[in-house]
Length: 144
Figure (tube, rainbow, N blue to C red):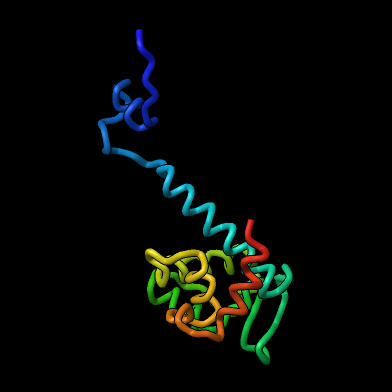
C-alpha cells in the first residue's frame, strides 16, 4: 500500500466526514497564516504606538489606547462593519485590537505588511506617503 500525503480537507472528504469544499468551518492554512501575520503586525503596532500602554493618550488627547486610535478610525470601522465601538473604549486592548484588525482588513485587501502598517499610520493611502516610511522602519523592528 502506497501512502500519499494529502491536504487535511481532502483526507476528511475521502473519509466521508464532509463533502469536498463544502461545510468547511475551519480556517484554511492561508487564512491562519494571514491571521497570524495580522496579529503579529498589530502587536508590533502596539509596541510602536504606545510601548504597550493601554491607557496611553496622545496627539493632544485625540488618540487613545495601545494603538493610539483616533475617533475617525472608530467611525470608519463602525460604518464598514456595522459595529458600535466608542472612541472612549479604545483603552481596552481587546476592543482596540478588534478595531485595528477591522480597519486593516477593510483598507488592506491584498496589501503587504508594510502597506498595512503605513496605512495604519497615514490612513487608507498612507502607504503612498513618504511621511510613513520612518514609521514602517520602527514597526519592522518589532515584527516577529
